[in-house]
Length: 489
Image (cartoon, rainbow, N blue to C red; front, side, top):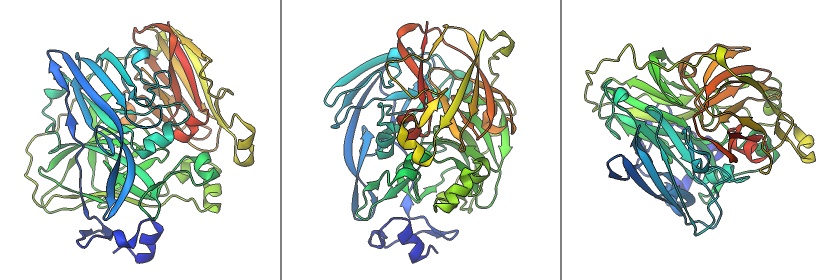
């Protein structure tokens, strides 16, 4: 059972403990797993209208305590949007909070004016309307605030949700697809809390330097959730929605599962494993078999991150910020109906991108200053330049194929994200390309002193005035300057 001392250290109140506990694996799993509300919009043929409201609310994350939160069409986090390849989506976003915000469609290929980044701010009380065609295959994407210099805090408070794309090819595979039953969003975040239940954000220089990492895990906005599985074969759409934490996910009984999807959609073939690494903003779809009666616990396996952080691992240990095991959620399969669907050996065939035909190779060097040096400006940069919204850093030709070589000159890992494309990883200076990294990606984790080459083909969207972004997806790093801009012409 979780000790009284450890419970206090987690930042929660003993008074918040409910009378009924579900005990398993030495951890308290007492809260019902929450499936985010599904919002399919109003459909007229291939046109789908989504009406979204950025709003403030209060959420009971701990019994008897009300936590101030932000959400989209609900008090905390966003509803799950779902549409099909070939649809034209029209979206109305009303900002009902007292801060300027945005909604960015992360992983979507779309015109720059529709991207929802820092160049499409929505002032308090105002409405932003946008539309775009869905031109990419089935995938688990997401959407979140991308407000300049305020992305980290707004996402931390709840401005994030999942956006699922379906297509005929994926539907024909007979994979689990009943939303909320055997097809489940799993939005993982870590947070800290004050004694009154309110979210505790930045607590000092370490949070700014390393990115905000919390001691309490939430899934879909719920602490210590237990999922009552209805079927024995589950499709879990994993999203690392945390500001800065990289998760090494496994089950406490070391069971294997199959990775079937990455950021940009389904893999060509399922990949069997018992451990998956997800950096901030990365997604992966997995198929998990749970036999009747079992109660596996999804955990973050500590110690993995330290080995990929160079000298920073020692610094974190000295400052009391070492990585710790973290229990994420539990699955109760005692009443699960046996699923007889067989796992396909072949999922989809990827459209190849010929790297030999790349018109250009661009270098992207991720850099950060440490400790007191952070006070002298430009602490976080790419190619020696900190983000300037008035400066265009790169110009790309529409439809062109390019290779970007991303190198990390700092002592900690950075997840690098590019808007408007899905790329393939073609080489690493160290480590192997496996698991979900075999698929199409829009985020790649670059370890210290590592160099990764990715290839991509840019869509045919031209706009020489409105840029897209590329940046570190440790949100505190993005807000402090590790971000650049490119236009497609």
